[in-house]
Length: 361
Image (spheres, rainbow, N blue to C red):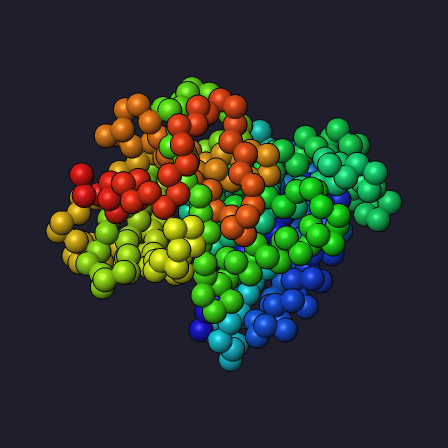
């Protein structure tokens, strides 16, 4: 049985409510059972538990995060009892959305209250899809008339949208759905991204890779839309043409673990199967490490930029250069790099810049 848990989030008037209807129709037609975890903030506020009724804002946020996690646990258990092969749990906002409504001190206090670290909380979701507010790029469609709880001006909506993006930046599979097309196109792009992630038979990883001059680390770390994470990647013994790796990912002594199997289709396109594994499974799989390859340690900067999610990998053995990667929904999607990056050349498909080759150094 395959169970996936995703988050649909975004700024005010981003299309989240409509997206839920599209997701249910589209994926149930393709054999998925779809469960929806309702938005927790609406439930609490409707019931009288709000930032303005609780003692302090942080008291409300603690209640909201606690209830969010509890609901997700209940849905996960219920899903495990259902007789179906493919099940999708869709969260109408996730626990990290709350961070957009708190300062850093309140956020730390809330994490302590629920007894979780940010890495554990963030990576408990398989993927996160952010619908950009209509206030940014589709201003004439931005309205507060269809939601009594929406009171933000255009400027406030954009600021909140940015805070939510900042909160989720750092997730290994975070996608931004902007307003570059009409609304129907926006919904279709969302479905494309979700379908690509779920695989629908096989998950094709469409990726482009660029070699850049060593980036300005101070600029990256000061950027609110950038998050730093540490990765240790180990390749396992595999059959010809197949690549199997395990990865430790996180920061501050808190990690999540992944196993990935890849098979090439073309220079740009690969079949990818990725699963989250336990620390014990990770340590067991390390016994099958390929003795011809070294573990690859790298610092990854995840940057939300112009509706894209860029991965900037900095390696200790590459003092003058770094590698930028981006996963795409289609092979012809244009890529925009920040002007702060000095592009040397595209290295998509260049074997000397594959992580497996780097592991042989």
